[in-house]
Image (tube, rainbow over all chains, first blue to last red):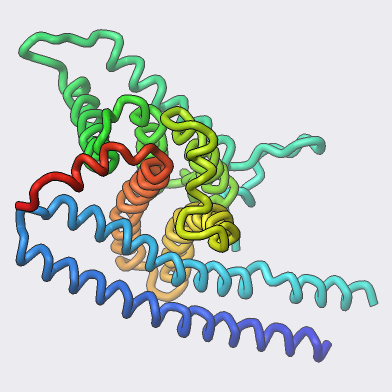
Length: 93
Length: 232
């Protein structure tokens, strides 16, 4: 019983830390990318289409690390394999 | 909590299950096919065209313009594949505001299937413009030592394509669920409206990335011509 509680506690803690730490880098990166794109747009408004398109692609690339962190924390909370294992193990005993 | 349409089992025969993802995907494909068939049944090249024909023309020519900008080639070979990806994902994401409709793109199996289509399409389109030798030579491009990293990059970008779309759509569902528990009055509606915007942008990004990946596998002749252009 104690193992189950421990697993649940650590999973919730790890999920929170995962999304918190994991999103910092990509948030800073997206901000820098947006700032650079706005600078470029202010200097060359004619190239707006190309700049916006490149911005979208790079945003998607940068964002993917935050998405990975989010998916991992969702797995930890809602589909945690260790939790399932401990539950079935406890039920078996 | 059910946050994937895979978990909504509508019919269970024992040897197979019919979940909401399959039903929603087939419903959406039928919807797209029927609407497009009804519109293209009576196309006209007169000065006055029906509003539905106008809509389809705007969509198709917009996609073609984007493809021309990215590849700097004729968009016709890529238009069916990339256009289908874009319209399928966009329709699915926009229909997610319809009550009781589970968007199939919020399931990892759908997005993995779409990403695998892109994974297969990249060498197919690449080999249609260049020989096998020159295509494989791309993997040794900077040096031979980069071969494992190039192969790894090929796999991880497919994985990232699938997880990005899934993560964005699934996060929309989860956020509205959590907000329904905390403050069920107005905020879920606002987050759903934000989900519409995210869904449209994600459809655009998926099609754009597919096009960029395909363009990177094509022959690079056109690029050299552009590089030689005098700088403005």
